[in-house]
Length: 320
Image 1 (cartoon, rainbow, N blue to C red):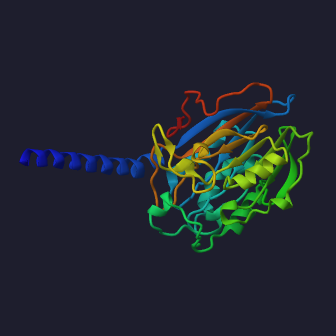
Image 2: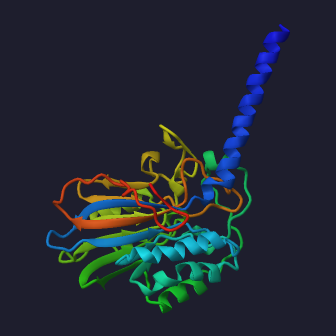
Image 3: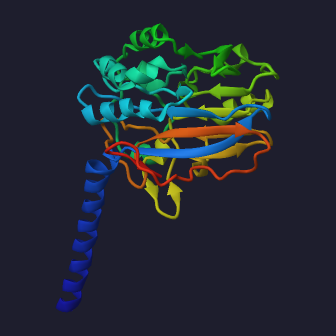
């Protein structure tokens, strides 16, 4: 009996050590393993030239996150034709200067953006169990200076797509773009942008923070080629062989990150994002990421999403 108890004790201690090691990795290493993911999507008009789009989301910046700021700034070396920012840039009321330092070189490129809940309100401490069992109840933190961030983005030439439809020129090609306010906060008013986009555009692009199916269905019904979103953090905690545990929205967990079809015509791309809430600073099997999408003409063929080139970007990045 004593031998059996000793064996059981060793198992428990071993499991505890393994769990502690996983938590230490998720909190101390994985959440700083800045990663560039790449995909090729056949969404452009048949006569269009390929286009490189950098998708950035869920930065959740704190003022002192220097390595994150440096890595984001280095993304300018990828020479994207367009930058799409799908929100949740802030995590602190004094983080606007840090976000602008990080995005500084990219703000000189064509860009579009919408905001998410953590641009409007600071994160709050909450029971970690609510991550796995989310509730519809929303308790907002203190207001954040989103108006200052918006003014800076617009001053540098980026387009705020919050309930706006417009045509923009990128590399001499016309893009029909539109966006909604954050569906996670039920601030979306798709009716304000409803209707089919310009059929002569090289690309019809929808932008939202949270990829709620009701919003995706509306974009698809209007005939958009591509919708880009964030919010999910890719699940933030993923189980190898199973994937994301949750998405923190109504999107199914198999689409928590990356590219997928939504309906017969439209593509969806969800970024796993670059940050976390400061009250849940862990990632597991889901490193922080930005995505470089190469858009090519329709008819090029079904190209698998997120196949890395095998090249490294910068001093602190992996392509995955």
